[in-house]
Length: 156
Image: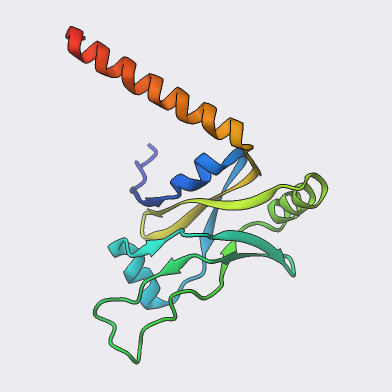
């Protein structure tokens, strides 16, 4: 029998879903030091303007902030905004590189989560949305919210 995996979402990048059209997703590991793992488990991380670049055949996460660990002291703590290496298969990195170079797309982080006791990150190949696409998304979201209110007021 397959065991149910222990999955705990820590944080999602809501801005990425709003600003980009998501084309393809990829789950990858993230290279962290000890106090960074403890801070991530506490949920002290921020996607603020983070993105992923491909340098020397590696995925490099830039702009992802992990706050210093609250019980780490000043000597053993990590630097909050350092560049981090994402761990993925070489073939997947090559495939993403070809699409980014050929079609003018970008790679954005979508979510960070715990899978078992490992920290994983979901990244995506994305294309930027135009302003009118964003307005249409806002309008659609508001209509769905209004429909939900109407249904609740009718007792459904």
